[in-house]
Length: 187
Image (cartoon, rainbow, N blue to C red):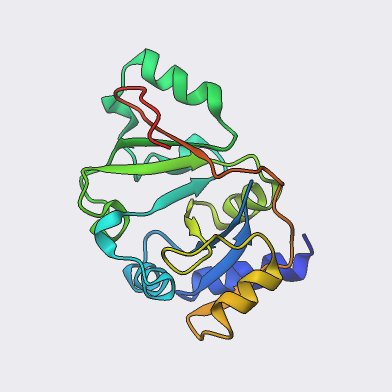
């Protein structure tokens, strides 16, 4: 990633903007998880109902502790999560009490992931916290896997501040999702 792309992405995130960025398998739409204005832009851009909730993606588990209540998990559950990170594994964990309902939706939990993608790692490290991560697509349509598809799907929508010109890691399927308390695979 160029310093220019990183700088522009960080500027957009800090200015309540939405960015499109590569993940392990698809492009994601992201924003500051502490800014309801930005989160609403993501929902509006995707045409996604807020009750479904959103995923948080981070560079490390420490960045997620203000959002997910890992203290409510036992050692076995926490170890299972840590064995899969960083990587394309999302875990549904009890949410911190103050988490925005725009992130958790109708749930008392939050979906979280520590990504192995180098762009996500660098972005979250420089931003010093996680970002929202939802597939870059209009709800119900296929997720975009490159910048050309993102540009075509959102055709200069002013809600999208920038598209990072980078590549996804090339996994063929979206990240797997597991429930932390039960260990059950949800996707």
